[in-house]
Amino acid sequence: MWRAVQLATDDPDAPLPYWAFAWGGGLGIARYLTDHPEAVSGRRVFDLGSGSGLCAVAALKAGASAVTGADVDAFAAAAVAINARANGGRVTVVHRDVLDDEPPDADVITAGDCWYESLLAGRVLPWLRRAQALGIDVLVGDPGRRYLPGDDLVELASYEVRTTTDLEDLELKQGRVYALRPPTA
Image (tube, rainbow, N blue to C red; front, side, top):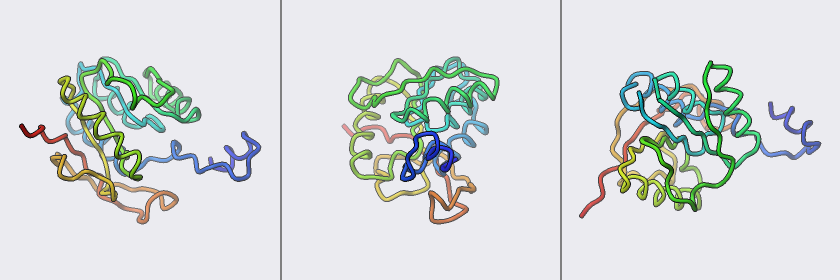
């Protein structure tokens, strides 16, 4: 896939197509939604940093009434739509940085693998807190990255997931799924 991106963009230094891989946190959320479809069944889901659309497709398969995937990368936005269609569903795609916007009109937000760099993590948590304050349920998936805000999370589940060493340091990781801890008064 990486070579195909290099050829398509005529850029031998094209960045790794992050959207083409199943990351540990997304794999955890997908497994969680398979095991707990009631978390999204009949509900509107917004998948932040959707990448390949793995979590969005898992939400569709778990019975979500509507799913939106958001990603800043054009290839990712295309991949979300293609992967949803390949799995017999439809996902609305938002191709922009939504973190400066108000949280979406949704019932559940999934946020897989948003904690790999400090600047992004520093923007994601306040946005998710604003969503939580509006009554939106938040599911976070991550294999324990450095910038994961552990004190702000309650672990719901943990799954051994197979990842790729192109992205992760190990082939097998613990894909953990969390809810946001309720804010303190």
